[in-house]
Image (cartoon, rainbow, N blue to C red; front, side):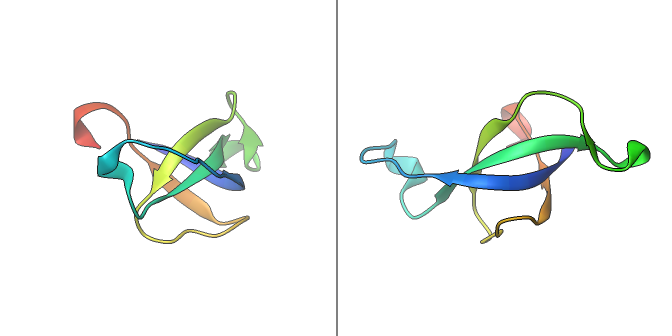
Length: 65
């Protein structure tokens, strides 16, 4: 699990059928112990709950996702 901030979105003309209905967001992993400073490169995340621009979110990867 990581904490990240939503910094943008991506439009896809085609995507995997299991992603139908989900938004694709660009999220910036942050370090909450260091004034929300970026701690790695931005990544693309599939949004299942409707996060918006500038919101802080939790992201998971691998089998937990």
